[in-house]
Length: 92
Image (cartoon, rainbow, N blue to C red):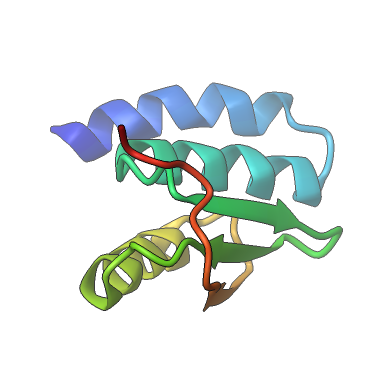
């Protein structure tokens, strides 16, 4: 059911997107938001490849789950990722 809702929300955005980069950006942002991943930064390039930088406190299992979610997105043509030694979103 969640996938159906996400697909319904994503399709109009992809139809509106005028470039591969913009479509990948929308899909990556939505996927990271659905995974509740706040401790990461991402960028997209003109070929639709997403590069994600995860913060220090993100566990390896969670990273793999998020990367697999990104790889399943049809608008994303490739995923690169790494983990850095600092956090982007500090929990209180």
